[in-house]
Image (cartoon, rainbow, N blue to C red; front, side, top):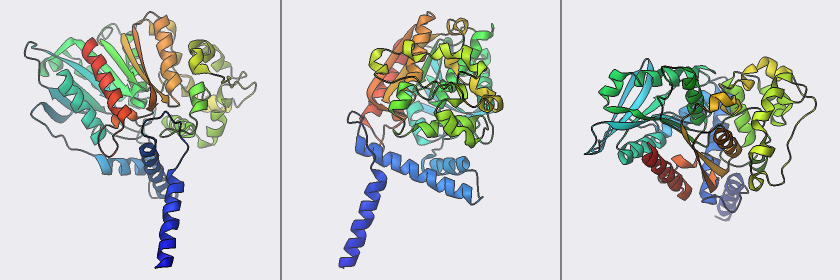
Length: 408
């Protein structure tokens, strides 16, 4: 009996050691976040083991785990009709809210889920619940795009998928089918989905037939650049769940089908050192010493290497492409973009990407709302139901939907 108690105590201590990580006191529901992070880390370790055994690519294995625990069939309710279909060959899940009594046509949001361009799905419960809530509360049609993921495809195929589905939806006959007002369509996404939404908005600004087709863009803790992994938020939150810096850099490398041998060099900005000529002209577009306010910069210092590894951008030139990093787009592109909402979280490596993009858009004359949450962490907006319900998740979702309601 005594030995069993000792073993149990040892196992509990080991579990506590695995779960516990130091977190800032201001973050929402810290112990719940530790448990969520430990669960995700455990799933990553299992997927890495499967990969090492040669059974499957680690991202396919990890996504299988994620989807297995959360996939939801298209299930309608009295207030929201849910259907799975495809738009020009791209799978989508459509959520149709009931129209308002005084409106014949409904507004619409094209939603792009996050997951590092490699994980999650429009069909998992987190995004199904979010889009259902949006459709019901906005009396809107929400089109959630099931774009193809890494390693099935790589950049820029994800952009092609969301562009193709969006162009199809914006056809007059399709908008008529769903009774959508063509003047009240927005594009939105979170994390990597926010990246794709921002890229989509910029691409549409080039095409005369598509210009002004999107009334709004709403970007939720978007990833917007791969040139500087030492912004204040990257330095401050280097080990913060659920997106540590090294994991974000690996997502970028995976997106471009790059070499993991470059990850450590990229973490210290060796890929954009002063001797990498292609990066020189772009550096001014994300000069955080001028784009970020003092309260965000704090005492952090820029990390700029004099000499680095030119092989990285030679082998992965996509790192310097505005299609993958919307933050580095030219001013004339930004000034054509629609009214914008950007949600950022204090405890997130991507915080400064969003804040800098808001500043650049504002300087280009775009109407921007920056919605910052001091206790927020990356991914929090989809965590609104038990057992992963966070107070900041509910508040961010409510704030996001409220802005859409007031502006769309």
